[in-house]
Length: 340
Ligand code: SF4
Ligand code: SF4
Image 1 (cartoon, rainbow, N blue to C red):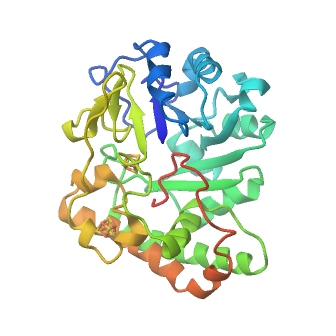
Image 2: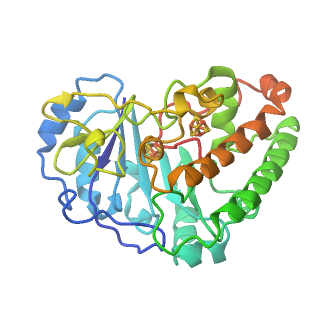
């Protein structure tokens, strides 16, 4: 089981598309006793712990305390990268996966986040042997082909992953989502073509959505690929258990506490379970499945991106089958959502 610990709601960055947690959703720092957390987590022999925020490295001492006190199979960190230099080698060596927010080309990253040079400098200096994932937000200014290629060209990350800034996006971010989807789908097809050509030459690029969907072509998803509410739960700073870390305010998302355990499961709603793409998509995302903030039209447009990604990969099914075991992903739950 993967547990995503929200260490703090605070962040030291101010990205254009990010809505920070509002103050009344949960306290800004952990309020429960680490001993209570340990008691809950250690019941499970295969616990993985992911540190999440806000920016989790603002609570670096708390993070270290948890790593040293609570045994886990994997430790995972999702960070904006600005404080990575403060993580010492001993702690780094305990992590299996580090995800660093990076949006691709410098001008795109700086437009939304404004700190490309600092993040890339910190990543270049990092002495880390595990899975290092560049985690992009794909938004209005993103050219998915160019931005993913820019990250690959850094030759520093083992993987690149992205999420479309859809449905819970901040006001004023999108000018024309429909047109963007058209261009994005073209870019994804171009990227799949590149990825397959490289695969045939024996070079496997760690493009997470491709690896994950290619794996699903043979194994199929039974629920949302991030596993939220199934094999992955978030723990809020007040000890509440959430299916998904991003929306603590929704009743359906509050599934228990560290003291009482997980008391309920979250159902994936129609049209996903009956959709022909369900085994490749899993319903994409619980929040997207349940909260139709962009209405039917927005829902269908996002589904169009999923279907395009799946169809692009399915058209190379025979090649993918040959590399099936080499490209199997993920090896363990690591907070990547697989479907952008
Ligand atoms: S493609 Fe859309 S409707 Fe189909 S399973 Fe995925 S999210 Fe649900
Ligand atoms: S994909 Fe959706 S359900 Fe899964 S963690 Fe992200 S926001 Fe939550």
